[in-house]
View 1 (cartoon, rainbow, N blue to C red):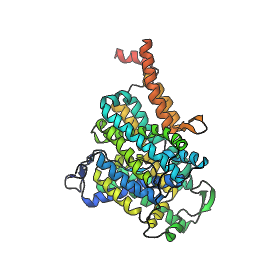
View 2: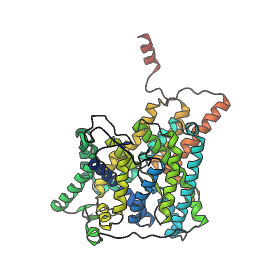
View 3: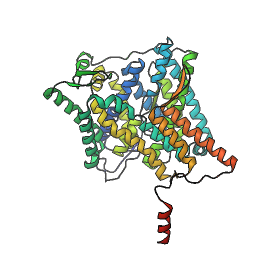
View 4: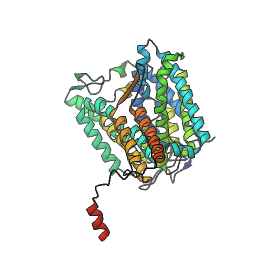
Length: 461
């Protein structure tokens, strides 16, 4: 079956510096399972946070993410390594729907419709082909979108995770960075997981030796609290079935949720571009299929009461760090998610990961994702001295990273990735058309710090 057969990479154990494991390859099964576990650890924080913020069952969200990932890998025939977790793009939507009197069924019904629309957009992109994608998403635009996906997550680290324990966050960041740079072989490829273990252990030691910390807790309230709270672990059952519920449909709720479609298309397109850049295998011809697969996965998840899904930026960071792009690792991750969804105690252990530890990890991961956008610009030699490239990109990046919002009505606003992407995309094409229509050619706005005097000296030499 397409997407489930892999060639053993070398001896499956040793990798030379700079060597990569391609999507259709794998390491030994023991190492592959370990990498799958690292992917679960990387995505599980956001995968749990999103449904909790939206009033949905996090155990069901975890199980649904495993099923969604398996469906995605099958539909993309194993060419696109990706984990589909709970989308955070709908947190604001859920608040609006709740304020209108909607319940969890109303929310998941609206998300199911968005998933169907996403799949429809994917079909259109697949039919139009890669040429249309390049026309709509030139390197200046796609680099900005990928950058937004990573850097837009920065406020989560800065305002939620890091303040809970700044010194543990700093220590975890330093240890993880050291592990990524200094370690070799398999240990280097699970450096993110090692960083989490280090931070978890450090937090436990500090609780035992120093006592409680006076800082923000998970809700943002300044209190004296333990770094690790195991109370939920002791109360949780070992085996349990998530709570399923059927969606119901409301036109007003659907209209509130539909604008997020812009963000989902941007996230998927950015993910496919980023993975193609990392693997060296252009995947533009698979972009439509990937978007269809994510739409279908969202429909599958929301049909049983789970959240919408999206390709996870956290796992792009793990791939960038490990240079292992094997889809076998993602199948292992999907299997873990399905099993762990049936184990409330595991969910409680994961939920107990200290915020400071996540802060130290995400500083590196989110930054690596954002810089992949810059790598797209560099490799495609995007010239930012040209106003057409510079102006819409500059505006969109600041809007997206800064979290600027544009409110149209009481129930409809765009912000973050969605608004930033819209500014970059529409701004680029509108300015391109206007400049051609006017027959103008603008001089460079930036000269990279080179003066006319320097140019004269260089030419004289």
